Length: 639
Image (tube, rainbow, N blue to C red):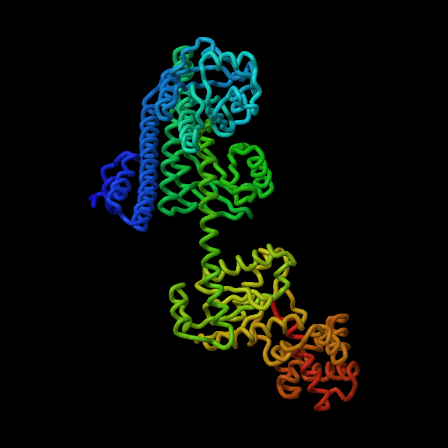
């Protein structure tokens, strides 16, 4: 039996980089040795796998060679300064990297509206070397016009292109058959076309197209750099008076490079908006504001006043429309955008005039700021979901695995055994659209997280768990701050504090009832706690949709005449009644508390009797009057 009859033999062939034809050897030897069909099938499969591996390795070696060549090209281009040298180097390296018969480059002529042959490598036809292609004509004219790569395995027979006699004659004289053309682009502008061509019909594969596109991208930058340097030299030679301007331009290019490197490093190391603002002012000088989409301050570097909101809106809109920074008086504005979404603005007050490169620095800073804000939002949303899920589990019943909940809370920096209050925000904070609901939840998440708490949406409410002991103060703060965000009154009911995870579900239910009670009392847009509402408030927390109407009707029927009398005459009958009941019906003590004479109290109570009827002091009637007074005080709490 031959030694070449094992799958291992294919590994040895792979190891020594054998030619593809040598992989038939083990099978030939196996057949000669008379191996059974199953062994031959096994070897056939092993050969197939080995050839696929060899092809993969070959593609990777070729890709490595192409990348190495591309790297060498970029290095070579970086060392060139003369435009003609740059163009010749680009075309020569394109021909070498793709193994093409001919490589050439056309550049756009904006004055004549066509594209002309600029450099060739491997060309033998003088006619071909003098070609000019109208925009849209031939393969190259189509690439120049559309800004997209085109490839053909046989140009002469390809009906996709608009053939002209001049172009076809030049291509035919050169003997070109397969042609690949890719645009040379600077930003959104096409400045020319880079080609690779063969004198035989063979298609260019996708990898070759991608390679030439990459080379063209670097080449366009190198061409632009070389062109700028050539123009700079010419200006220095012709205009000595422009020396200061050229130095400023050179300095701005260096600043742009330094700013680019620094802002790239900021993104990589996880810097913030404040770091970007500091980097811009260090490079450009002056002072800078970073604002969010609502005009709120994100960062301030240096002495600079915040512009009027209307000025910011107008300048940011102009910056977005023009796609670049804009100047308004002494200030420069750059919109911070992501797609169609406005994320804010950078406002720069430079010490010196900004040149184009300086404006690009500001615009690049705006782009980096947008990336950082989007990243911060993504992180915040992810953390908000985790924190919201924890709070939802804490206020759900029954509570499961308290130790696991404590562990999850510790990872978020929340101590569940510390006192917390729960605040429930009413439906009046949430408009009909999903975006408004998400905005309120996002605000609540940020608000709670900044204070070491949690927030979640549950049962149509937004719930916040905040560390502290003052439930009423927390409710009022949430109602006030969220009202500013939404632009509409927000009602917030609170309860607590709670010191254990097990108590949080009950605390949430109390906060929810407090919220309902505030609605029943007509105190929408305010914040209060269950303690402040007392027993009457808790009772009202169980009412339904008629709560507020029922309270109003009860007050009107019970003490309405007294309330109306006080409102019309500016008297103090309600205050006198509260003091009278508060001291157990003692006229003297009520007078002392009100700082008036006993006769005054007597006269006021007689007036109350005239308004409510002589039986107002009977026990059952007096209880209703006291309850009505309590409800009236809850409906209009002290400021």
